[in-house]
Length: 123
Image 1 (cartoon, one colour):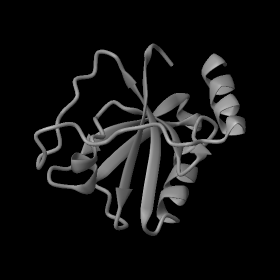
Image 2 (cartoon, helix red, strand yellow):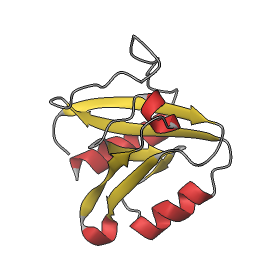
Image 3 (cartoon, rainbow, N blue to C red):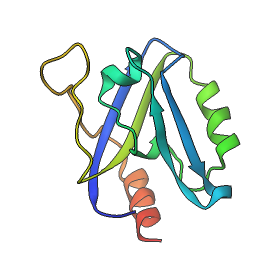
């Protein structure tokens, strides 16, 4: 992964979330947001096309295949939290119904998960 910011995106209410992913371990590509639907939960959350997905509900994604990611996403019933990495040159698009950025923050991940994620970044 290159230089960028880590951001936590949160959505509630269950699927459909309104975004499509691409990549995965078997494709030797980072898991990324490929498309965001207009007027969706994703478009209102601050998620951007091109964001790299580091974890989904605390599950690191670096070693997951695309089918494993889909299975994980299908298991989520109400609340979705994604730790994403956004390249510094990615423009932030304000959610459609807000005049200011949503409250984006890093969650209180455990130190073990932070170390795991940091090790993945260094590989």
